[in-house]
Figure 1 (tube, rainbow, N blue to C red):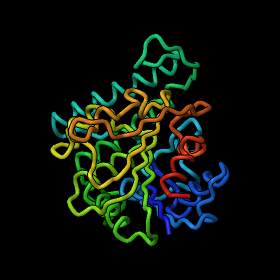
Figure 2 (figure 1 turned 180 degrees about the vertical axis):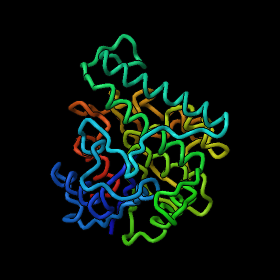
Figure 3 (figure 1 turned 30 degrees about the vertical axis):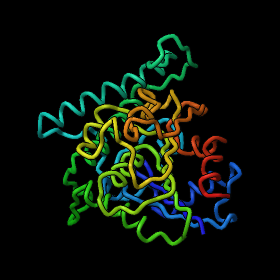
Figure 4 (figure 1 turned 45 degrees about the vertical axis):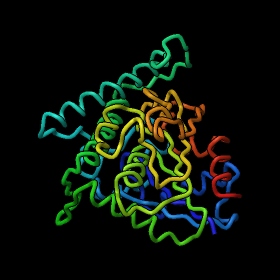
Length: 302
């Protein structure tokens, strides 16, 4: 029986079961009902590692609404940086994501200055809250920060999330094929585990959506396992990547195939999609695109 492991992206989320239902409903509404197709699914949930309590409604950044709800302490600030390397990482990543957000405001694709794209104005207050939440989640994972989301519960962020992802793959209830569908920061987690965790199980396909893996600063934090020449994870038989150039998370470097080669040869299949509305990073937007639906169907053998 085919199986899909989902892993979500940045910001707070509703409870795990509800979040998974939202993803499945989005796919079903777009024409791919995994339950009817006999596909089992599981969501790798890590929002509770970062936030005190789940969102009462679907997180706004995922739903495509212009805004990000702060966590229960009202904190969406970028992390305080105890080391120079962390400060440099945050500053560089902020500049790149901020640049894409600014390019959206001006209707320009910063990777192609001659290309004019539609203008999508977003209030700076929205951009700031998104950027703060994004930086916090990426930083805490890549630098394995110690975080206490609730009294009496303290985690090493990368350690606990790695454990959850590997456990989900190891105890997948379905059979083959087994694919991972990841979004946003979830793509970094999936890649990191498949490449850098020695006992991570092999999967048939990795599907990355709205991924920041093309950003140099993120790649540098995946060392020593990652290299541009041989960065493809041996634990994934196929890798398909989907991006929208107006997505602030992946728009700075939307095509990643040349950053994750197999002994110098291209292996990742990059596909550009065009989402709609003001917030192009929304998982509901991506999961509704025919290119993404077709890829999931194909990799599951449906």
